[in-house]
Amino acid sequence: MPPKDYYDHMYDIEDLTHLNAKIRPRSAHICAFEEMIREQHCSEAVQGLRPHIKHDVFAQMLVSALWAKDRIFFGMNKTLLDKSPKSCALEELSEYLERTPVDTQQKMLVEVPVEKDWKQLKINPADPADVLRFYKETDSYVYELMAANNIIQTLFTFSTMAERLQKLGVQNVLDYGGGAGTLSILLDRLGYDVTYADVIGKTFDFAKWRFQKRNLNIPMVELAGNERTDILSPALTDHTFDCILSTEVIEHVPHPLDLIASFAQKLPLGGIAVVSESCDYTEQFASHLESNKKYGGAVFIEHMKEAGLHLLEYDVFIPQQIFIKK
View 1 (cartoon, rainbow, N blue to C red):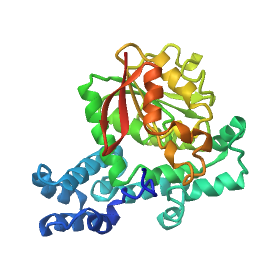
View 2 (tube, helix red, strand yellow; view 1 turned 60 degrees about the vertical axis):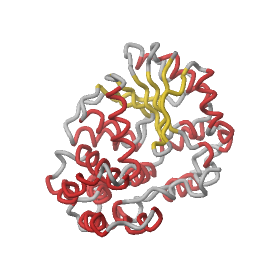
View 3 (cartoon, rainbow, N blue to C red; view 1 turned 135 degrees about the vertical axis):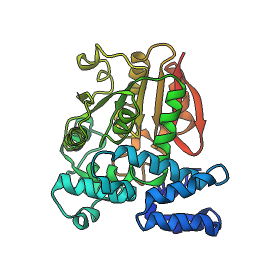
View 4 (cartoon, rainbow, N blue to C red; view 1 turned 180 degrees about the vertical axis):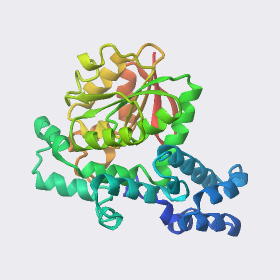
């Protein structure tokens, strides 16, 4: 049975005390380093936490999350190296929006801005054209993704996934539904050949600004929003990929089985698909289509298998599941 709250186990660095209480009592030594992080002394805290990562799972998560954060925000501003991920995200988003961090923080939330726009735009979830209109017109995912991408669990997941792809020999990656571009930025920093793809709109524009701000030459492909043909479209005909990466996209599209089939068709034998889905959480998220609830969990894995994509690696701590084409 999935937890009532999808984000119940995911926290900002600033929420460490609350998270600690949920996991187990912390040693005074580890808590001291966590206090440093809350006080924006991240670099110093990481150096102190490193000797403990073999003995403390949460210390390992913190070190990995801050390691990913440093690479995502590298070159933006030297002062960001010692700030928490949330503070870095607030500063970058505020610069893009030309607003104060206080104003930005009020909207940089998970689900709240998305649900508000979904209702205001009067989206009909049964109409694929209307769903596509939402992603073209809304700016809510700029706020949501900067909130969701910069929590401990997400950054830990991103760093772990990048390490696993390296072990699998992956070099060329398609970030399908790349959103705010956070994962594309991290993978590019780590030497992967990344192509970003998403529906044209305000989130796409924000990702483009982020790439330019960092002087990253990441190819960007404008998707038409057609699960059957986008990956097989002329824009990607000449591209070959070792890996197709799609995080939290499946639950948003009207025809997820067509999308899965296109992943399988685009990948070579031995190619890797890294996919996460949250179809079980349709009641909690306005843009998670109710029609996709039946595709969650074990059913999703079975559909991937039917398409020729077999589960290679699964970890309860990492939402992204790794599949291989056979």
